[in-house]
Length: 68
Image 1 (tube, rainbow, N blue to C red):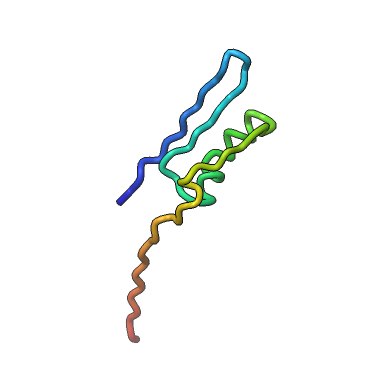
Image 2 (tube, helix red, strand yellow):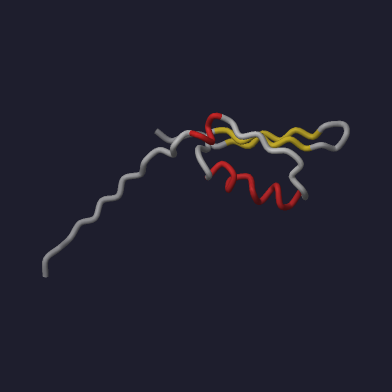
């Protein structure tokens, strides 16, 4: 199952920007929004959601070995 990755951005009247990441699990969540955080400046506060603490879905790799 592929999760839909979303980034919700709110800009308050005071100029404060809130970024909420959805559909990204684990440390990848921080990596997903890093480019935007760096472009906007200093991070004042960070709150990790329950998705951060979930393990990413495992990936499957198949290697076929041939004899020569």
